[in-house]
Image 1 (cartoon, rainbow, N blue to C red):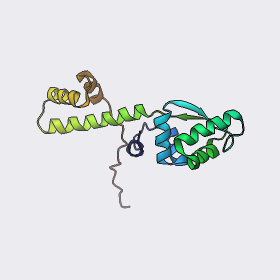
Image 2 (image 1 turned 180 degrees about the vertical axis):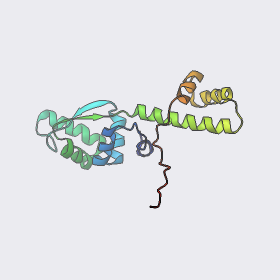
Image 3 (image 1 turned 30 degrees about the vertical axis):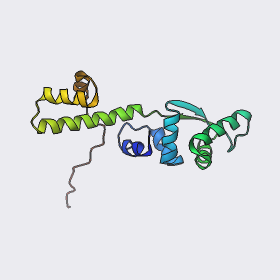
Image 4 (image 1 turned 45 degrees about the vertical axis):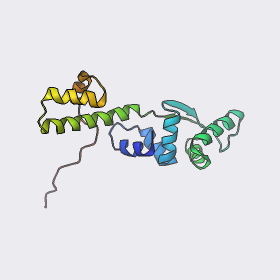
Length: 154
């Protein structure tokens, strides 16, 4: 998971709140590094910067190894002595791919492809079964819709 991936995915409605908080506390680069290193894991954050116990020192060293000392300190200050769930964001990545598939389907059918031809092309392009493409097409987008309401001048 790269910082660019997180930046692109965070607009989706299914983006985990924990990932948003991790980005806010430690920054995009550190969040991406943690999500890449420990996806879906619960990490016991030391109660003190540097660790106050033997286990705390081990966890501090592990955290510093992944995100660096400055970001590790920010994480400890925020989550001190609690468990930090590091989201995997795999579901969010799949949601983004689904949005891409729906957009590509719209473009292909606009360009003259039949439904079956478009499903075939997308199955090849994304290396998924045609039935999976059909399921994706039957679902709603994951991106928040922009409001199209017009304010009335009163």
